[in-house]
Image 1 (tube, rainbow, N blue to C red):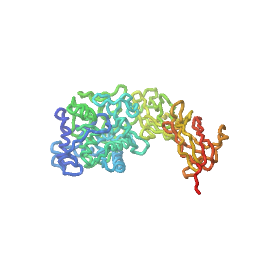
Image 2 (cartoon, helix red, strand yellow; image 1 turned 60 degrees about the vertical axis):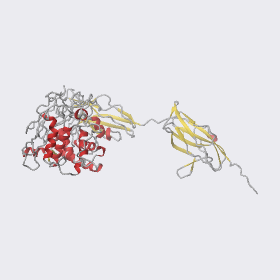
Image 3 (cartoon, rainbow, N blue to C red; image 1 turned 180 degrees about the vertical axis):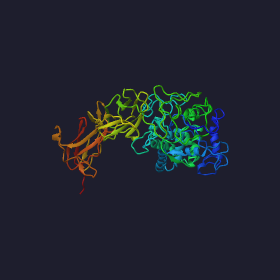
Image 4 (cartoon, helix red, strand yellow; image 1 turned 90 degrees about the horizontal axis):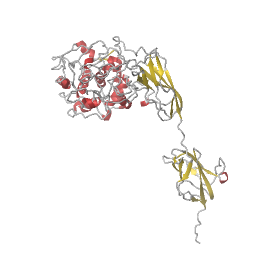
Length: 606
């Protein structure tokens, strides 16, 4: 556990003043970006009151870490006037960010410079939010691709001190099929991830448990609504959009300024973990409860029972055990009850992960020995529609007991354009207390045929579970009847065209048949009763794109009302009665008479 350094701030007079303490300290130190500094672009709208966010909430009011960055003693450059100092070693340790996590933040900044150049997103802002949300992915416990070794889940969003959000992902991302939980190092609730999820590492997957994906998604969220984050009011509004709590705003800004003064990379798994005693339980004042915290932010706990929470900043140069249950990023804990010092009780039946050896990433639960398919194993859908069934597997021990907290990767394999939400070809789900993990909804593309959805355990050699999938062609719209929409006599003179258009309506079982393919052909009279009438080579005709005469039109299709209007019909020098035959998919036919006469005799004078 990180050492408690400096004085303790207590609720009542303390917690409500945390934001003020942070801001006062940074103001006194003349840190850039706060009131009291020299005017610059960052302060164009410093006097404006940030407005509440208009985007969907990131995490539904989950908890967060309230540790503050190290501050120097008076007399040193940039020192605070009222907060104690920290040893140089601790300050240096806190400035270290795990290498993969730091790389993800910088790559997200670079990507958004191209896609949203007017946003001016600094990577240090992502680092500040990542620090407050998950302690930089629990000190950088991620694999080479940036995916966390174990789930980072916020408390259950069941309305007990946080927002109440019933399940939106079938437990695919958070392992909970009753309520949602914030997921991953940047703490997205599944419904928000469905909108804002991004593929930050180019692996075809949008995974909230991956720091590259999560950092890019968080950056896109912060840049929403045309914000320019170099403008103070826009910066504040973006952070409040992430969590509408003034204390959260102050805490993130303090880390933002701290990281802007200098950081360095440290090996993955060796980052400083936040003090678990300062994670989430009491992040909002009683006065603001239900305003800053209860609706949009993580501060909805109120000030009941936050006794002795240390907000003065702490650090340690060595990796620490995972935060205790209830710390806001533990995958197995229920949120603490408001008014209690209890940091949280693990969900019954769900084991708390053992802390890894310092410097060694936490592995996927070793008990998992096999994956068993659950429910439907063969997936079918019509082109352009969602598959009715979702792939689902159960992680089990050798004796068939469920294993919760396992990352299961679903991957689309084969020639197909079927995709998971966001166009992803791979997604990662988490097994719940019953050991099952369900993939998100899979949508078929336009390519028909067979492919496979393969489920594997991330980070372990366990036999894969395959789900055969088939995309069927769309049913061909059909018509069993065709009729003209008017009863006008179609008559024209030679060398001209018909003044009236030919309009018909197709129906199927008495209802309008939309999208029905049709063919129009000028046929000879003597073949009208044949199964395959002969195309006429004289008389009325259509024109092709080059203006040349043609007597058969294909690729015609009825509109949404089942109607079809044929192009203009022209006449040559032949007179008489001619036949136009229309046929549709489904076997409906209609024969229309066309009459062509000589031009009326013109009077002549001697």
